[in-house]
Image 1 (cartoon, rainbow, N blue to C red):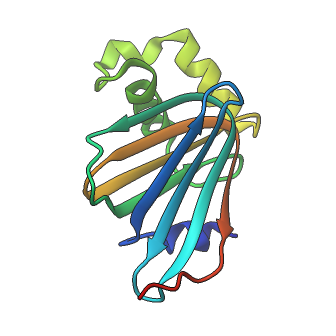
Image 2: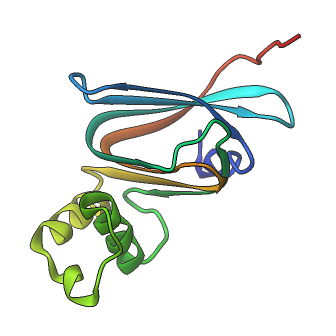
Length: 143
C-alpha cells in the first residue's frame, strides 16, 4: 500500500495487537468502519515500541510514517523518536543526544522506519523497526 494507504487509517479502530518479542515482530489489526474492511500493520525487526494509554476502544486520528524519502521535518522526527526512546517530551538540550541523531539518520537513509499513530480516543503507538508494512486483509463479516 502507498502513503495514501496510511492516511486511510484515520477513524479506523484498533482491533488486535500481537507482539512477539523474541521474533521482534509486531502486528496491529485495524477495522475501517466505513467499509468494514480489515488492515494489518506488520513491523519486523522491531527496535523499540511504545504503547501508551491503551483502551478497549482505540480510534485513530493521525498516522505518521517516517522512512526514506518521506516528507516531514527532521526536528519533528527527532522529537517523536526521543519520546519513543526516553518516554517523555524532549527538552531543547535533549535533541543533541548522539544516539538520537544516529537513529534519525538510519530512518532518513532507509535502514529503519518509524511509525506513530495518534488517537482520537485510546492508545498512542510508536514503533521503530527495520520494516513496517500496511497489508490489506479480507472483509470482516459480523452478524
